[in-house]
Length: 271
Length: 307
Image 1 (tube, each protein chain N blue to C red):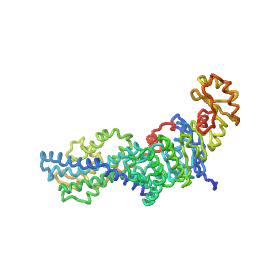
Image 2: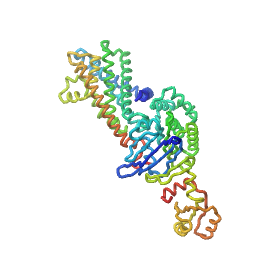
Image 3: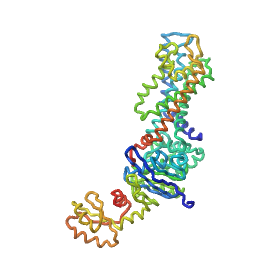
Image 4: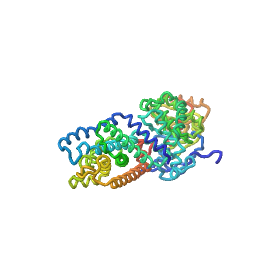
């Protein structure tokens, strides 16, 4: 495999991201609403809990949220590509079809990281980003979390035929993954059932890694819940598993007809 | 074989979808450089054949080599050697003309400078140069088709598959697309495998093959095939065409019926022998005419299974 095809997919994703202004603007507005409306509101009720304001506590969560949405929307262009026909260009290109999944996944992660970086700049300008932020860990957190989010996105994309059910994806994937992740409340304080679900959610460990970067480990339990290596191990394991499953699924589809029928709108005998 | 290496060699190619046999033991040899037309009615297996040769679906049985590579074992090598233009667009509507070509070129591992150069040359050939920076979504159907072909040849494939390249276009645009393809062929000498059901477009093919129900039923140069039909096609129009057809069967043989019109083949050169038919059949006749056959006639006779 040569790197140029992968680069082509990445470049196209970035062009499309900046061209779809409303997608980019809502990617910035969404976390700011969480931070400044919900964060401020709950902060007023809760006050300073364990050395951090609720707004500060939310920062890793909204960074994660930006990446979750960014990666999901980018990964779902895979479905758009099947519908619009761009997938035909990828299918006839001279490389094994699983490379399409790898390239798409990297493109989704890149879109997620770029949006998170834009948000970080905004937060720095607004003075919300704490001076104690550990940037090495932050970079690690952004990369690992964006890849895991891209993994979730590729899994969904691999099993989705049309974008008609995007609302279902929002309700049954994005929201549960976000709400049950420790983004809004520390995992350690959740009731047993929710805690178990959160522990099984790979995205939890991405947010936790970002908490390490932004908050550190706090005695109050408002900081990170797990050790850095645990976060990294879970994220890496999940990302790899997601990539393998999505590639397997895609190669099934592409080698055994369904894909070409989606792409040509033909069934059976064909013209 | 050195003088005329085969661009495509298929033997006993079969494609089965459940109980449906889309392609039924197809044998196909296309020498390099040939302009080859695969013709047949809808559902005859043309697209399935192209998709198997282009490695997009797997043959259920049989084998095929394209540009010397096996379509199952060496799919990636086959894809590197071919260009494929689908019936439907493969372009990204949100990107510009140039961006689409850059995307496609990079997928073939071409260096950006090479893509620039080839894009400029091809856009010039296809009269799209001043649309370079326009979004594909804003192009007319004909221009989009032209760009789709440019997209399909940006990597200079040795073999180009064109699956109904002019479907849905009006006549002037179809002619234009054909002029482009002709220029491209003269310039590159590439092998072209075409499917179409606009038969007049296949007239310029070096060789055409008719397929029916996934089987190759007739092949040859368009001229040979047209000549094999006879010198003339005699059309007899009548409200009771069946009775007339039965009456004439002894002298003219089998016919094909198209509404109120029966088509007979006439091998003789002497058309004066046809004129008396008018008097013979008299009032039952709405119209009587004869003309030279063309590929459309071959298609009709093949489709009816009478050739």
